[in-house]
Length: 203
Image 1: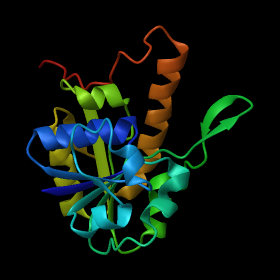
Image 2 (image 1 turned 135 degrees about the vertical axis):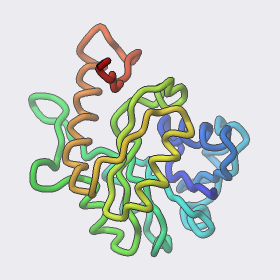
Image 3 (image 1 turned 180 degrees about the vertical axis):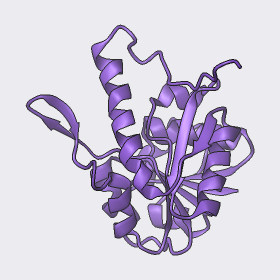
């Protein structure tokens, strides 16, 4: 599968490397390709527009506030776009979400890219768990069931125990889950060396 990763930070790099390792054709899209060529394990780097032009799946791995700029000029009609972002902001009480309960960042992304098939995934854990998922959990949700299943299988291929949980409104559950992971990582002894898992009860 041809996968474009928009963003070459920790999350984008981890996902791009893992997708390439399991046999997918990966290209990174960034604003300045020349500056991003180092440290991407030899994977191709180009502009966002060029990266998305042939992609079947596009992963948004930029900060939430940079999504619209990242996709500006990209033809994403009919394509699967994976929203791996979280709508975070800093407040007097610490990190918080800018959306929740009656909307989500993913739904706002869908409104900004109306022709794409938006799937929320890869937002609820740290990048180290993407490098080595080792059976940790990952959820996917989207309004197009076929697109959601494709993304769920991508997560499964790179080692996650992946579960599809319904339409895109379920992102209202996944984005707070991401904030919980961040809260635990930065305020407890867990640091970043932990992952959420599903433990099935023995009958």
